[in-house]
Each structure stands twice: as structure tokens, then as C-alpha cells.
Length: 190
Image (cartoon, rainbow, N blue to C red; front, side, top):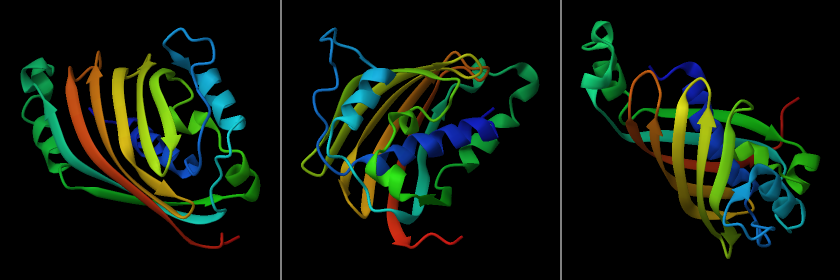
């Protein structure tokens, strides 16, 4: 079942675009073909990536969800399938306050979406107004997710498409396509 935590993880994964407003140096610092969380954080810290501080509105839309209902426990079949199918086209909008400090030094941890997740990036590129990122995250509670994010950004907005392929969860394999967009909507309310 997609829990609140899983939904939150997807929303937080999409929030990474808030930090993408410049060029990041080569993220694979040791040249081993894998970009660790630490390497991603170092690349962002060394870059000119900044965003506009203030109140941001972030929207995630579930475009498509594919799964094999036969992989569900027998007692869950017929109940979880319709619930997941009803998520198609669903939009979740959240607001967040980005402080001056966060805007000047965005953290790569925004990308993994879960403190419990162990993520490695195979691609981590922000330049020329484009986002192109691929990562694999493992979480002891929800299995493994292969995630790609592509899109565009500027200092006040972003738009991207996400594809998530999940394996090893209690629900079996699942593929999710989503769209995420964000924009600065004003000053933070206190």
C-alpha cells in the first residue's frame, strides 16, 4: 500500500527542483561512475545553485500507476488496486517556506525524500535551465526505487517529469509516472 510516508517521499523527491537554479560541478568526484549522497551534497555546495527565498507552492500530479495486482497479498486484492487506480490524475499541492540560508545553500538531502533511504545517483545534472537526474534509493521499509527526473527551472519556478520504478515493497513491483511543478508565490508568512 502506498502509505503516507511513501506519498511524502514522492512529494519530497519532487522538491529537489527547488534547489536547481544554476550549474553544478561534476558530481562524481571520485570517478567511480556512482554519485553518492555526499558527492551530490559537495557538488551543490561548490556550485552557484541558488533559489529565491520565500513561500513556494509545489504540486505533484500522479499521471499513471502500473502494478501487478497478482503480487498483492490475497486479502488486499480488490481493495488496493482500485485505491491505487483512483490516484491517477490526483494532484497534491503543498506550500513550503524557503529561508535565505536554504536558498543560498540548498541541500542534496532534499533529493532522497527520506532520512531512512540510501540513495546513489547515476546522473546529477543541473545546467542551462535543465534538470536531468537519475538515482536508485533503497529503504528498509519500502524496497528499492529507481527514479528519473527531467525538466526545466529558473530562480522562481520549476517543472519536471518523474518516473519511479519500485521493487521489493509489500505491494510488489510498481511504476509511477508523475509531474511536479513549483513556483515562488510570495514572502513567507510567519
